[in-house]
Image 1 (cartoon, rainbow over the protein chains, first blue to last red):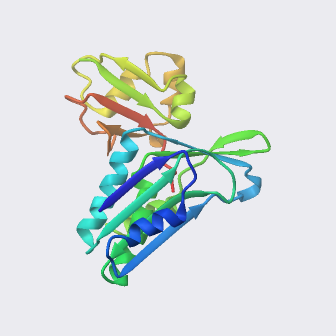
Image 2: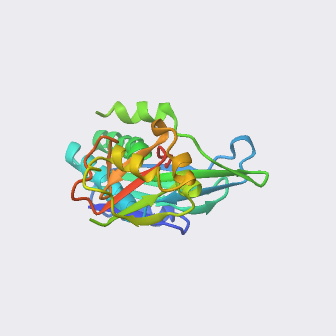
Image 3: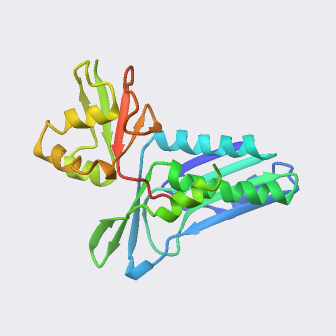
Length: 145
Length: 85
């Protein structure tokens, strides 16, 4: 089962993991991304492409399900304003065994970073700035090609 | 034919709107040609589109390269490289 959500509300880790475990799997691998306080970031805002984001995340999850033997793939991404320490993204892969769950989990987060339309804007000391894309993210996504 | 063009992040801010409906001439058949045509709409458009290397696009919600066709498209989005996750 594929679950994709783009939401302004905080990510409920316990509920998301419980849902992933409910797939009847022998292994669930998860990744949680948190807002970093890099160089004094006070607030992080996430803009996205309504409709286009959900379509892109669904494509990423479907590609993972086609590549590994999965019982479930979950991607939950927050949008709107957040502060350091808050959860910004959660992905989970449920599979019969750990190998597929771990690989698919890594794939889901690597791919969503380059294949889904989100944009970060950091605010430091009252000054907002759009975050530049990183070449290292392109390299991480490309290793799955 | 009417085409909805969406802008995001600093492209949206530079142009001053997130969405506009335009009717490009028939010879505008690619994303790159559309960007070139839109750049003539205002100084803000020209400035936002000055460095094509910093622009990415989606046609009908799927990511494409700038040389992709827009023939028959209903929605084109123009935006900076993505930074989610």
